[in-house]
Image 1 (tube, rainbow, N blue to C red):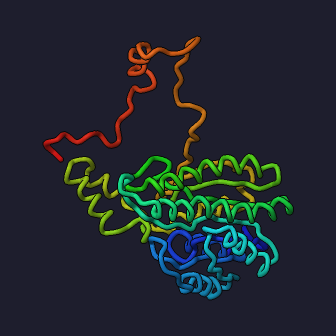
Image 2 (cartoon, rainbow, N blue to C red):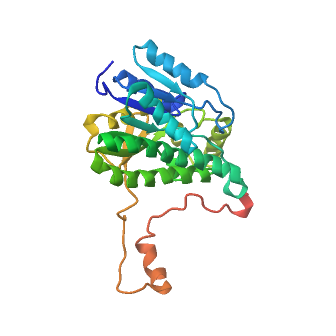
Length: 311
């Protein structure tokens, strides 16, 4: 075991399986005491079970670490408060928060129900807010803290059938930028990462079939398809745990992406990549003339219309 986080107390939401499990284990290996939060729901948020959180706690303890389970839902204010309270009650403080809990309810936007929208937004975006607020109150008082939020390529770039998930994940990136400014003066860093991982959240027969379909239609080569298949969930843990260490004390308000052995620093939406400027208001005729060779140059429609004969 290492000691980069010796004496620190960490909370990881959604830590019973997948990416969260790997993060919790590595935090403990580096000396942190860990609250393993997991409601134990299915992929779509239904059902509850204590087994996933308990199993990870047992793994940590078997390796000589310290951990406790929490089974509250992140999707309510009371749940967020209770999760952070567990850290304080059991270990005396809260130093690190990894907002990782999530569910999926994929549907094309024109078929998506209010319940499918609300459930995903509440778990991801509201859950990140509820836990962050509860932790930030205490971190501000102690003038120290590390908060790492979880975004996704679905939010940063877009992914078909995930309007709810993508909206939540892009919202989390924006939430990260603002919280970094709000909390940085108190010694609290707030960063974000977008993992790639083969978990029950990302791998399903339907997803694999969709990938094969894109290859069959010539939209992707076999090599490109292989590159899009998610990596080992545990590959994401190092960048998250590093952001929780003192070595990352000056990293604040950044978004990283993790794909197997690759870690990317993602550009902020602002400042702009390109700008066109004139005195006064643009006319449509002027934009017709100038856009194709300036701002719109090289832009590719990620989902072009299908010709009627191919539908």
